[in-house]
Image (tube, rainbow, N blue to C red):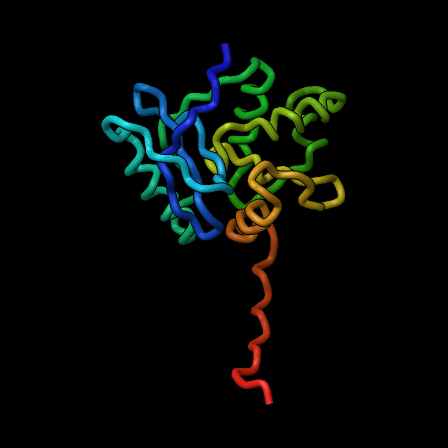
Length: 174
């Protein structure tokens, strides 16, 4: 049975905004999602055991010093969704696959739309790297965290080239 979405998250600052982390009673990460609106109040009670490790590992990842996470996770979903999320975890850092390739890895290219829906329903962004799935033409297509986040993550991992430096604006307007 699927658990309802938590009402409260532990907030984590990232280069593209806030992420909300939710944990189960055993301290396993159950959700990691981008939070767009006013951050909710943090959950009451003791901090989950793995929260400090998650914070440190995300900081290391964003600074380019971590490629693989080892945070205990629990994901709830259908059998098919869990199969897709397990397959996503096999995509190496610095690589991307197309939705068609993901469907083929699952054993049936006809399940491409179902695989895309499962990818979009991923409850643990970044650690289950759904951002590493792109369109057949190389386009970024959809991403629950926003295309700006997907682009940032793919640039960070070297899948996309680093963004060119922005031109400097004049300091005075004569």
